[in-house]
Image (cartoon, rainbow, N blue to C red; front, side, top):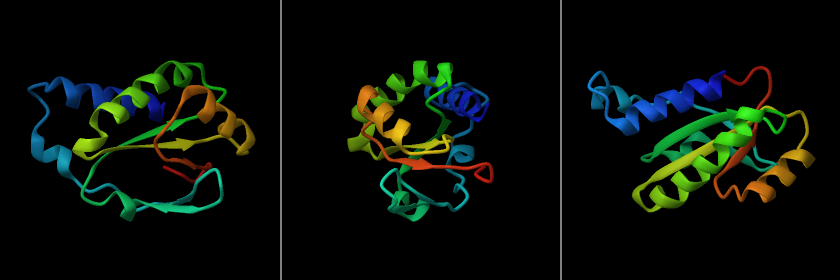
Length: 118
């Protein structure tokens, strides 16, 4: 559900809908501190000053499998302009996530979430 919300929010922002005011898009995100698939800690501070899209997803989620290629393409296209996509995997282990990252060519940071990650 969070992934769908983020996708809709991103779509509205990219489409430049009249109801979206630019100043509303500049609110700082909540701080986070999560481990990546290799156990290294990644933090929101590493993204400071950039436009960040957060995508909650899981390897078993079919809609996620459909949307990930779009996020990969966005990251490739706009990384030089300061866009960072952060994938928060809600999977329980890292083995499947590693396979998924390789299979889908995910080149943006992927961290591991849990039931307490919002």
